[in-house]
Length: 600
Image 1: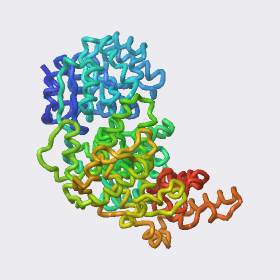
Image 2: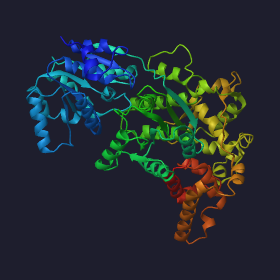
Image 3: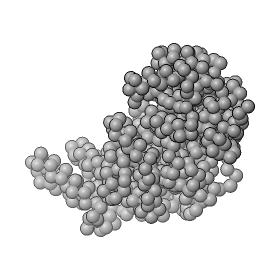
Image 4: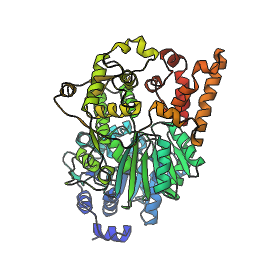
């Protein structure tokens, strides 16, 4: 009798199983239902591929990413495994050929997307076949609590009803307890074996940095550490993907965009190039990533905060699947938090789900502001434990300094309270630093006791303080997504002087506005495209309104935009010379220019 080890050694070429692979394989091969949580690169595919070759019939593998099926099938063909796929890339004749192979019991594995699988015609086709097992890959997609919910996955419970005797394995790399519970419930795996194989990826170095000028930070990282390597750069928006890919290409890197707005042929070609060639950087939204089999991705960079720790861990897991050293680098800022909360607020989901999303954003912000080992917090989030600090994250390698921020926090919290708990960070900083702009006088905030009491800190230092107060949950953002801050109950002891507050000291700070004006008297070459675009926008608006350009905005205001890169109304209102009316009349035009160039 052929054993699992025989198949592993002779078909796949590995000497022995890793971790719990053998136990999982034997359970599934024996006809049991199985739930598997295993880190990316841990060998999940073998957990269903080996049983597929041990059990008679064809294994049906449900995969959410059509673009990767060809590569998976090609890899199995090279091993002598009879595999194919059903998806929209096939011609009518090719489709008929695969169906004939299926009916003639000529396949070991068939890959299929959930939306195609659940068509009545295809379910009826499977009823005529001898099925060995169902494998539900990326099973977190079945859960509305998961970070990458796919509606088509909800109907997979039909498989249990129509094929009750066929064993099922559900696999994912990232699922918290709530997500696991829903996977089990929807796929009816209550009576199956559950394997949680640990989440640690010790070869990945986790680093998180405050956004300074994130493009320049990215370029420095690539030049100093990743020359000639393949990697993934994630951006939150399609526009930023396009701009970042173009910007990297102009600097000599082979960078390709990937997002849902691209044509299917371009997406397929770019993904194929990335998977099959060396030294390629794919710049992508989260539409790219699931099921990526490229083993030698040496880095994953997040240019913006992802939506949750689950999403972060899933996306960083694309690095270092070969077990060799890899780096996960994230840039983040308070603007990311506001944007993510706006997106969560605008969701069509119910209020309970929205609150959960807000909590997940807060938890991820807590990871960003952490003083201690990042890996320990990541693993703890998924119910895993690391007894001692990992020694391979930025906080372990260079422990951050902290400072007594009690007085600064009291000033910030008091400012939030005295201004009525109905303003965002930019305006609060203006109050603290004693700004004399139109908005301050409109609300009478120059008469507040907190006006001008925070001049000892630059605007950027105050942004760091507010961001950390959010992370410590001493402040909270409004649920509507407007960026308005309000106090939490936890702020009381700080305001009363009953507790001391230590905050993380950021080693590098952006210059204050006054310092910035000196620094950019001569525009850096790298800044010239944005500088010229801001001036062109001002000229166009000036001609349109029949006024001199300086009436729209002065050079000083444009220079501040160049330094601070405002990407929303709150940030634009923090620029000297931008009041409410100019914000209404011109602000969005300049925000659009900044976003188009994607400088933070």
